[in-house]
Image (cartoon, rainbow over all chains, first blue to last red; front, side, top):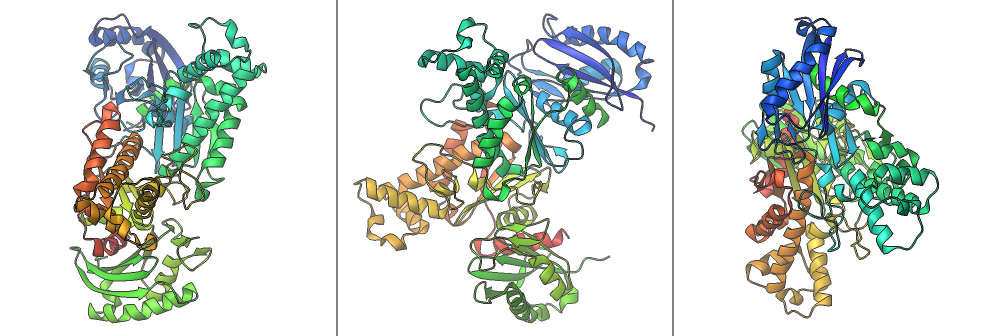
Length: 320
Length: 320
């Protein structure tokens, strides 16, 4: 059967659900955004989304031009096509979102978590093109990961594999609480939120002057730290070094698992570029096992932040 | 082409090289052992091995009855078929052992490291039969691992993936030196050698009485600790608890990677059974991410220790 010219990608975020219609050359030819919250039930959400989708589907010539749909969603399970107990969404329990969209639209729909979707997008359209073994690290509210081994996403026995943000990097008594209920997880230090926690902690316990001190406690964002670091603020630069050092050490450990060709970093904090990547590379080189030294590349995602998640989700559609 | 009835498995250890001729039902129908050291060059080693092999090959009706050969060797690289810079062998550099045996015997030969061979053996003949995602942990002089994802061994970009013994579990200043030149690796604590180091360290810094104190410093083996623990020796039991606790915490982290159906433990120290497995299970349950709780099984290898390595290597032969 001939492939149809388009797929739909859905980047389902905590705030916005962004739909894109994507062609075979990674062009987002039409897109529409719907608020993720405020629909009451998941059924209403799907109904309202499909209504919004009709407009852009018509723009490309109707649903018969669309091969499939891919969804990247927090706590998305590829095997079941469900969003399961996502703490940042308003739906409780297990929501069979792939099935619900598929029934409404009449096309095949696949779903995975957002970091896996980013990895698939990177493999289809980005810097991982042609790679068979790589690890995608996404830095945002949390630290997500998508692991590719032998050219395939690692979903594991239950569809939830690739939670590298919850590898413990501090086993001491003073380790930070993590949102998962445990202590010392990579995510508690190296997510955008973790970087802000570092800044708040250091401003409390140190007397070093910093422009970060001018920002109200509640308003400080990782972006502010990147900007301050790029303007030469000492403490902000130290926070980038500290974050990069932990990420580099963690990746050196991850290498023992799948010896990837590359680690690919994606997300807000990576916009700091070398301010973050240099300490990552330094710590990685200093800590990786001799056998692996100088092998894996540590790269920035080449996908445009705004469309990367939609492209990643859409690439999942092409796999169907 | 019809499959021939036998494969050869070679378990290449630091001391002995054990060859077995194995049928399709995991019976070792003939075997022979050659010292690994003392042959001078790798060429002489292969020649002497092939000479020893002639006898058992004749017993099964000649080389035309043999499908292929599989080798499990320290620092074995599946992609290149070479043993590369193995610190415990007398050959320096890169030894293309698969090619050398293949040329001498006239059959296809594949090679991988010993822990991967054990994982393949477990999948072909053992407790991992039918599993698509599991992690094999081998406890011996070091801590080895063989990782299976989507039914395939994880070799990574360079053939050296699966070095979980070198994941860092102690990042503090007082972390133990590891044989790899780094500090705080799992292997430095939880290998048979690591358990002995724990015993020696604790006997030095504690005054607790223990039957282990009757054993000369140089003679103490992990086996002695297991035996003392099974006889109720307090310190020996504490060492089993400490080792199991670290292994359980490490496996809880490994779960974040591939969410395996099972962890399978193999090697001398596992003969202690529940004395080691109970603390592993306890620490695993207490430390694994909520999503994964109660999912993975923590199992002992079902392969007989004496033939497991040969069976594992032979199973690699069937894959050819």
